[in-house]
Image (tube, rainbow over all chains, first blue to last red; front, side, top):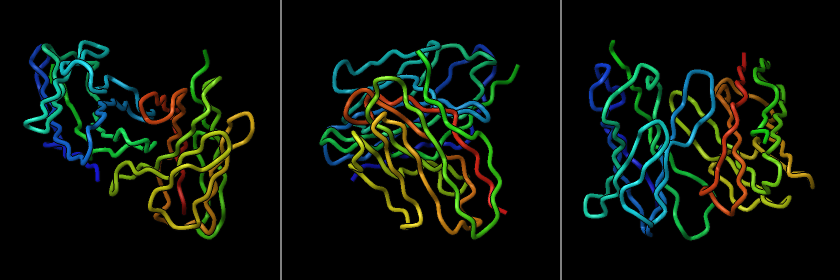
Length: 114
Length: 113
């Protein structure tokens, strides 16, 4: 079975500071891993995805994530936070056996302090 | 290229009624999935359709149903609405088999009173 744990339901950073959002996964098979962002009253926008190619994945808006199998982690980072990064972020896992659904974490709300 | 379109954006229904939500996928996408988002339960998978066939279903009661038409447009229906069905319902379409290629719509906000 697949599951995702996001540590920290709320994270606050100062503008210009490092953003680190944590995600740990559990999967019985090699996973596909995703990070999505959701702005108020909007759907989900894909930031980046890991599908067993390079372990360091670069996404949109300067975000990146590193797949660490030994730690079962897929943390999201951005070197310098911008006010526009304030949103809710979701980590998700899917398996590679053909299942066509995502298992989402509970989300982390990022606040950026000017 | 138009994105995933969900209609209506907002809906208010009375407990006991039924509701139908619509999702038009990106042109060429044949897979459509539905998710429910609530503050208490988070994002949960409802079901997925591919070429008019339901391929996968989440753990929801039979009051939740869906279908897909030959043009890949999809509808989901909730019968005998309960207060707990109040949620944001998100649709995602994909041009590939699986969640690898998801694009989400903006959702339909359903409020049951």
